[in-house]
Amino acid sequence: MFSDLEQEDNERLAEQRQLVCEAIASLKGLAAAPSRVSAGDLQMLVDANTFAPDSVYELQCMGVCVGDVICERDGFRWVVVNDEYGRDLTVLYRETGMVINALTTVQKRVQSGEEWYVTDITERLPDIMLQQLAEQGLT
Image (cartoon, rainbow, N blue to C red; front, side, top):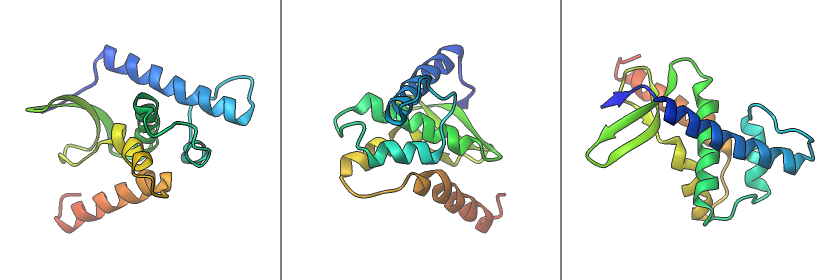
């Protein structure tokens, strides 16, 4: 069900990260794009309404960077999930089967039109997941 990323996946993620880094550089007036982004950088893009709700690809690029922030935490990593619905990239916690579908998290929130914070995904969501695993004795 879960497998490691292939070279093609890593290349696609790198392209998506670059798009977000360039958007951050443009918004901050930087001459060069940063090599990585923080939750604060992503929140700045959200607050500035940098990408419209119908900018699906760009919003999913932001989702990649959200996933990267989550993967900075111990035990989280990007993987491929293959199931009856197809093949997708997702963030897995250890080998628990618990995933965060980071690619669409930003898109869905922007399209909902509701106010939200990047840290709800990068901090609170993993914490809730870890708490549920602990309650089940799986951590």
